[in-house]
Image (cartoon, rainbow, N blue to C red; front, top):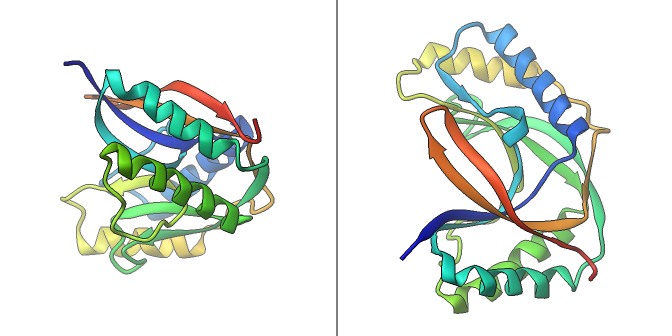
Length: 194
C-alpha cells in the first residue's frame, strides 16, 4: 500500500517568509558559526497536526475532516511575535518565532481537527498546542558555547511584529525527506468559512 508522510498546516504569505529569512540572516550573523540546520524560508509553515505516514487511500477522509473544520471558522489574522527556543534560550534545540493575534481561534481549529482525526485512527498530540514557526534545529554536535551564543542572539533579535499572517485556508501537506532537506507539497487547500 502506498503511503505519504503528511501534516496539516497554515501556509505563509511571501512577505512573511521574507521577514523570517531576514531574521535568520541576522541570527546567523550575530552568533557566528553554529552547527544548526536552518529551515529554508520557502518551507516555513505553521503546523496544526502532524499525521505521519498515511495510506493514500485515506486522504479523502482526512480532506473531509479538514473541510468540516474549515467550514466552522471565518478567515482571521495572526502576526509575528517574539523569537525564542525550545526548551529554552540557555540550551536552544529548536529556534522559533511565535505568533500573536487571534490565537484562541487558531487553538480551536487545531483542537477541532484533532477531534475529527482521532476517530480516524490518528493519535492526539500529548503536548499542548504551541503555535510557532520553526527557523532552525541545532545539530547534536552543537557545543554548550554554540548554544549559549545562539540563545543570546535570539534574545537580542527582533522581527517585524507587524508582519501579518492571514489565515484563510487549512492545507493538507505532503513531506518528502531528501538529503537536501524536506520538500513540502500542498495536496489540498480548503478555504475557511466555506
